[in-house]
View 1 (cartoon, rainbow, N blue to C red):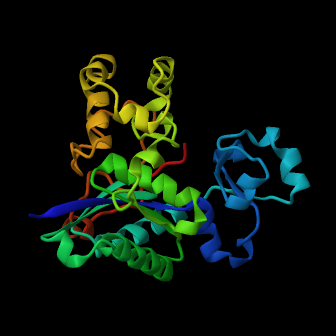
View 2 (view 1 turned 180 degrees about the horizontal axis):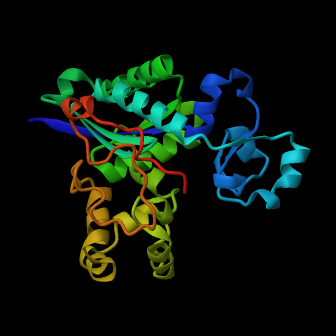
Length: 282
């Protein structure tokens, strides 16, 4: 029986990482990238996060922090970021069966094996480690990879991989023995697709962790959160409901940024793609 796993590959601090590829002197220093007209912070290095600079913070509000900690500020260079995104996605396309370019710095990949026992429990992690090393070597961009039996679990695994340096940027959420214990320590708001409004509603009903959400009554979830919430609930319970093509059909965000003009899932489609003009500075 074929077993499919989703890998969510997310570039770390992408805009800052792009700048560091061409200016190595920026490495290990606090760096922020600013939006159009240098109005607000749209990307931060880990060092800049540690000094307290917030994502989206207006520049005038953090000038004191910037001066006190010698934070380097850079104006955005979106043609560079689009080009680097294309390079990363080309690397990923060569190393997966299918790919969904979810945003300029994120992509879902799939891997399928006919016999999971034959390849061993660490097959997916080993493969992800190789992908991470090859992308870094060939593009200079560090990535984190989350692995799961559903897209929602892969997204959650990616968040864990980014937060815990000891994991070396890769985490397979299906490979751990006590997943419920892990779920009990993660806020329900951290689930991909929950959002602030549903997060507040769930908190009001005592559903505060991923584990609470997992064990919530299915019919109650469908009634309170409609089909979208019910799909998220099923995905958290290990039932794959979202294919690579369906992930953004229900998006209701104000702005969506992509590296490509249409959904791209095959290498042949990417070969002639012109990615130079699809990303715009907000």
